[in-house]
Image: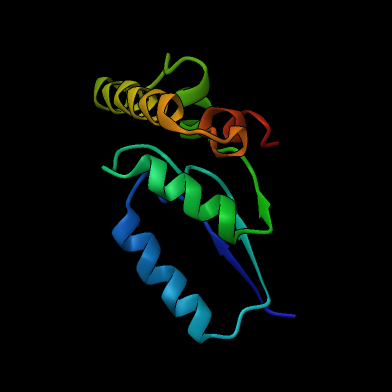
Length: 111
C-alpha cells in the first residue's frame, strides 16, 4: 500500500493542487494530512475543502488550531495572517447552506 503524506499547506492552493496531481500520477492508495492546512496563503477555505475531500486521515496543525482559538505566541506577521484566515473562514461559513460544508466545524473535529 502506497501512502502519501502532506503538511504545511498554509492556504497555498496552487501548490496543493500541483502536489495532489503528482500524488495521483504516483498511484498512491491513501493520502494523510499532518496539519497546517491554513496559515499564510490566500486560499484557506479552498485548501480546507480540498483536504477534507481528498485525505483519509487529517490532524490539526498549530496554525489550524490558532485559527480556531487564539494565535497568542505567534510572531506579529503570523498572528495577522491567522486573524485574516479566521475572517475568511467565518465569511465562508456564513454563506454555506449545508452544515457539512462548515469549515470551523471541520477543523474543530480534527484530532
